[in-house]
Length: 311
Image 1 (cartoon, rainbow, N blue to C red):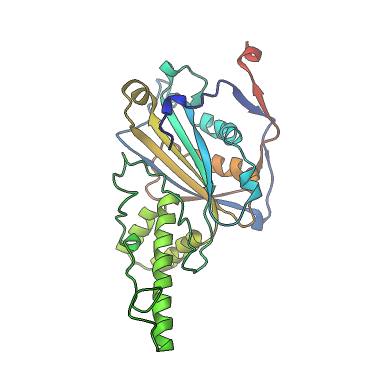
Image 2: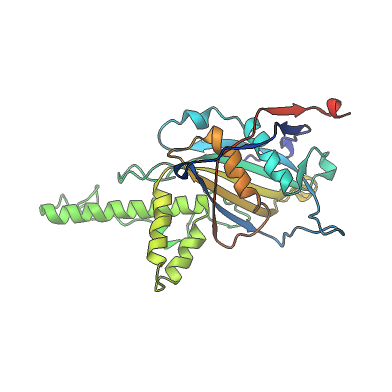
């Protein structure tokens, strides 16, 4: 995250497009978006006298794309400006509006997006092994230095395997078992990191606590399958803008994470649809994972109307 939040990108323009066209999808063309959203520090939306959600103003913090694995031209060609323009519509539907001067801005929304890699079972590979969690340290102190999940603790080195000392094991079966155990530890560690990045960690913990219930193992397998497949993701971290601007204090109000499977998808094409499905949870607490299914949406050509045009 960049240190200079005061240099956050303010978008003074209004984003418009032609009337959205919902493309009726085939069954195998459905877009499944997995969403995790949390609120912090007592954040809560307020209602106006007529029962509507009170609008809140925001500025975007200049984000960046982080990827792992193979080069993805559909992801790499998307700029921060394009991501911000695409997000403006779904945010506006939830009464988050942009274009206000700093003194009247409520939120700074930091935007991160990218893709995780597929688990490849190699000692050097692993999903999201090089990606940060995007969990601000003021929300979870020490999360970058000492993961609390036992799955992510330092892996022991097996004697005779991967330079663990004691020489190579002369029993081929035992050497194979040791290598398999080492790879499983890498796999668990990789999955744990990806779970935090995508917001799956709380759901997996619930499963661990209630694994005696029927169906939990199947659900766990489904989640692990998600983690081990490549996924496009977006992470929005909303800070109290006034506290940051006036007091230089970082106060996180909400974090929303959402992702789709990369296979059969294109980030440049599907960002609008996945953001639309996730938008109902912006500034809300999902209390676990939400899985929304819908068709891909063609928003038409985006047009930016300057303030001068509006006048």
